[in-house]
Image (tube, rainbow, N blue to C red):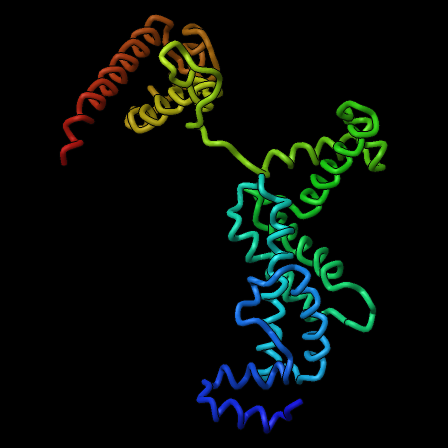
Length: 306
């Protein structure tokens, strides 16, 4: 088996680039494929055993250690793709899931101890899957909710599936609470939080199709309602500056009539006027406010081109 110095000499004599020289020193005589991602699963497993033994001989942080570590990542990338297939139905792009799973693979390589006698794939898969689930938990929610509720949602989902397998029907809230040792209020809170996990566009088509083959409306049209208070708020906002322009007595009479719902006779007693006088004042003030409102509406389109 060539020594490190002999390997350097061999690499230079062949005109190898620096990266190739590092690779030769890292392998130290071990046979490794040029494209690790293309080897079979069995070959990758057997080669990984030898590479882990060699990795322990190298100092962390050296180019040789980094080279061998990268080779182990490439050899075992199939584990990440295998784990990613478990989450095919999720909305996140597969590329993102594989990238996150690769981080879990790197962590598993750094933590793996060959002396324990455990197969690397069995050791790495829980770490890879855990990294993916952490990614879903932290970034997959459309609306951010506390981690306690995120974990409660997962527990409710797992327990519901297990209950349905055991009993043949979906569990009720009380049954979930009994299995998880929670109150029904806590289960309800977790179910409510689950609604924040994903949302649907208000423009998404819903229902069947009509005779023309077109969707029968959208989510927004099905759930939207007319809110009468909006028009009231707009009217009040438009009235506010007009009412502010009235004199104090007129504002007082308006407040007593429409704010305190007093009769004209009761208002007359409050302000020291006859009921007939109060009636004339109200008619004049309301007429003026109506005229000013109509004038504002007529002036708005003329201001738009500017």
